[in-house]
Length: 120
Image (cartoon, rainbow, N blue to C red; front, side, top):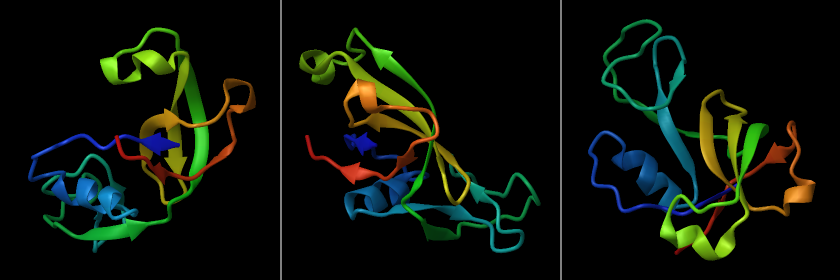
């Protein structure tokens, strides 16, 4: 999977974007119950502990679903149609949506995925 990193100035998700820029996936993990949450929140939705604990996650997962876009949803992708966008279940739990950087005929549900940084 490939991610083009947007310029986001959101204090709640800042650590996530900084991690991606550094080449790692970081998300909040509850220190009490271990629940990994995305999107980030002030408290754990499982045990309600208020915490801001961020941890690096395994950068691997499984393609759960995907779609092929034949019309660009953003001008930055107009020269690249058709392209694939998928939902990847990370090995540590959360689900991310990302561009799948593989030929369409090779994309299959259940395929292993690993993020790859791609600058604009």
